[in-house]
Every structure is written in structure tokens, then in C-alpha cells.
Length: 228
Image (cartoon, rainbow, N blue to C red):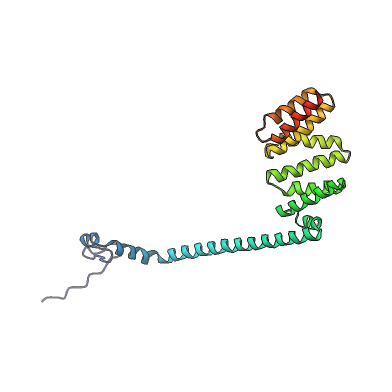
């Protein structure tokens, strides 16, 4: 008598030899024949969420950057308009004080200080040259502010402070060469007036060795001709 075969119990620790998972089997010949376009499509299907996320983030960054540029341009245009109004209304001093941390505020402070210096109001000149020196970074304008501070101190009776600032200018390589030569010229004249020939020669050499000190070389040469 033939008994029906009992169903063999599957042992999860001992899988049957003939159990094959064909889900991940790909015929090698078929794989070799997959076209480049098909491979791209497969890659896209497997990574489309990640790629779409990256594109979205990139778009957000670009839009944010452009928005900041537009906002900055509009803000600068508004400031320039305010500067023009203050200049025509003779309220540059107030504009400079209100915008003391900005380049355009520093330029307004420099203009205000120059006017005050011309009017011999050295206290006001010192105040606004100080604002200008703190705000202006461009070498020529920064040098103008530093020279203004030196001369305003000198004219106010703070002779030692004024000369010290001129000395600092001659040694500051961040400032324009023409500015340093101008400071050296005034120090040379001061040294000659005090009978300090060594200092005079030192400052004269700095002027003559500077490639950007043309007008100060001419002034120094004229001064030496007049004092011989």
C-alpha cells in the first residue's frame, strides 16, 4: 500500500536546496544588451526622489540669492537717493551720523568734515573725520580721512597728536602711496623747520622712492630750491 508522502516541513535554518529566489537573477546576455537610455531610465527610477530633492534645494538657493541681490540693489539705490537729497538740503551731517556704518555714510562724513575744516571748525571736522575713517575702506578715501584727522588735530593745537597721526600714515602700507607721500612731505617740512636734518632726509627719501608721489616730489624739489 502506497502511503501519500508526508509534506516535508520547511526548516527556516535549513532551506531546501531546490528553493531558488529568482527575483534578482538577470541573464548576463540580456544585461549586456541593455541600452544606455535604459540604464539612465533605471537610474532615474531608483533615484528620482533624491534627484528631485536636490533640484528643489538648488532652486531655492538660487531664488534666495537673487532675492537678496535685488533687495540689496534696491536698498543701495534708496540710500543714494537719500544722499542726494541730504546733499541738496545741506543735511549731510545728519545723513552721515544716521549711516555711519555704511560706505556712503562715510563719504558723507568726509564731505561734512572737509567743509567744517575749510570753515576752521576743527572740532566738527575732527568728529566727522573720525566717522569717515571708521567707515571708509577704499585706500584713497580712507587715507583722506586719516590725513584730515591729522591736520584737524594739528590745527586744533594738538600738535603732537597730529604729527603722530602723520607718522602712522607714512607707515601704513594699506593706504594709497600718494597719501603716504603727502604725509611724508609735511613731516619733512616739519623736520626741516625744527632743524632735524636726519628726519628730513628720511622722509625726503620715502617721497623720492615712491612711484606714485609725483606732485609731492615736485613740491619737495621746489622747497629744497627755495631753502638753499
